Image 1 (cartoon, helix red, strand yellow):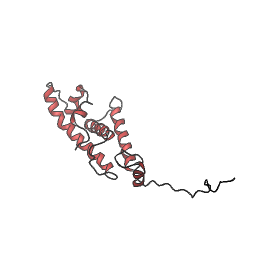
Image 2 (cartoon, helix red, strand yellow):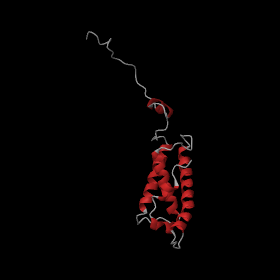
Image 3 (cartoon, one colour):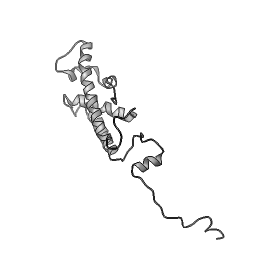
Length: 152
């Protein structure tokens, strides 16, 4: 199961950019353009999901089903980056935003793999999730109690 869909990623691409993603030649037919860009988007999503699973596999059974919203967002961002990286990303244009979103996704996924953030799919209550992630609280025994303080 993919973490994002072709229509979701296609919606993020401006119509005038599709020709650039497909090839250097201009294709006038909208149907032909869409037919040629769909497989490219599908491959970009598959690559993005593979990259995400690489980070998630350390802590979660993959693929996630259903994927949390944040994973859907990162799948779209990484797929978009994969598409534009085929033609080269111009950091001095609006494509810089695509690079920034990709870097943010990778940073989050790195923190996720390290156990520093959570996507909330651990299940159970917070104590159980914290215990699975290695969190523990220890304290000294109580010195002052109601009984020991009586009459003072």
